[in-house]
Image (cartoon, rainbow, N blue to C red):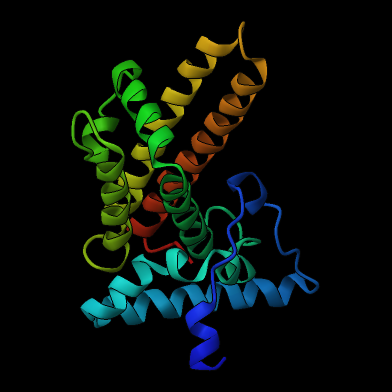
Length: 212
């Protein structure tokens, strides 16, 4: 791509509902090998020499390039694997960036309703404005490349659980007045709860040196 073409290139934006259905692999075994090798190489190289500019580019990757390149690499990987964890982390980040206003609403409602330490673990301000929630999810992504990777996964899982709690309760509010919105929020809550379970499992696997 020429410099002129790159200047006017815009990342492809897709709704989060579409992301998990993208890019079926023609050769599952080869796709799996590429997913695991690229995830391991990326993480080990950056964590061994965490250059600030490289980390910044990786944290901002979907804002600059969209999600398609990552989907081609990692979207078909098992959820409880290194590429699967990275894929879900980037999906979470993209979800918050794409609609920070709704994310902040759901997070604040979830923080009030949830009966666990997840809001403390996630580490968002109280209450969290949309731009503050974006900053938190970017901070979690930064922790993937510098710091304790398992802690970053645990923070992301806690973040998902708070969001899921908020989405569930707001869905209940709309159940009798806006059924389609309630259904969309319930679907979002289920997706986030699934991400949370997978990311927590990945954190445990990482601590036992079994996340590959």
